[in-house]
Image (cartoon, rainbow, N blue to C red; front, side, top):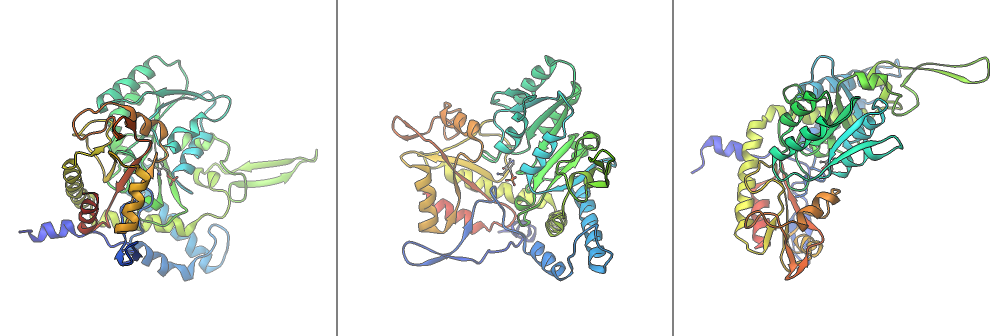
Length: 431
Ligand code: PMP
């Protein structure tokens, strides 16, 4: 029998929409089972309550003399401090509020010193794969898909060892949005720094599931999105080293990023940009509610404690994997093999099934929301679908029908709001 402590570990953090009823093709209704947290996690009830309590008081930040404007400015800056604390930032680190992980990584890509060489695994999500490849000057080394975490570190080590002098940046994901596998971030950071390179962590999938400590991981920057961290859409974070960002052109040109703008005698414009990193790269009226919501989520997760959240997630993941392993038609996709550490994200294919039809059937017949496709990580998913199985039930060459390759996959993902029943319903449906 479960002890009180077990029951506590099993108690999910309440999220919005947990009682939403959806229609089934059979004519009945069922409570929606959101198993697509990796795309967007439902906001925590607590976050929504905090935002609702603040809503009557919001005003434009850094602008007005009025009370609400001042209050909002305070809350915006407090939110920045809360995020810095949540990420274990070093004293010099800066937190910039952006729109999303995609926006954060594009910001950093636009701020690189001239001639920076970039090192990226081809397995990255498009948000951490593509921003580096833009511009005529882009010098990117694409590292092939490693098949173990050790191989990833070794590949990076070799690539950096052979690289010419000059600024270098490594971009790596903390946890895959396809396989859920956790990457050896600390070791990759050590390899990067050994060769004088810097490293940015795409923490979009790691930060909702694990404590991310920028100083302990020794990464230079961290990027993540609010909507995957149980806050609503529209705000994200880039946190880390200030120097490159301070020296870079402002990401967006506009109000708030400037200290002084004057017409020159010859009819031109003289612009003095802010040196303060956040102001320099946050032009325009900032999304103060988005920032406040992210800070609220950070506080809620810290208070709940990642140890508890991770323990519960491991248990749900084990149930899920055990249930799927019992089905010979199901192949779970994996880069690093069956024993790799994962967050609550798992992709699979089912022999004889088109993945999109399978996902549609889960929705229509069982009220379960999963995702199908290539998950904005086309090279990775194609590698996984094309490669041979490492072990029974893991990854491999899943045939859609005998002799026919699957073209895409099904992804199930969960988090702090997931009740046991959703996993049980999913397994019953798949079986
Ligand atoms: N990186 C990873 C690993 C992701 O899973 C995602 C979202 N799927 C992103 C980046 C991009 O996040 P956003 O769409 O919020 O910018």
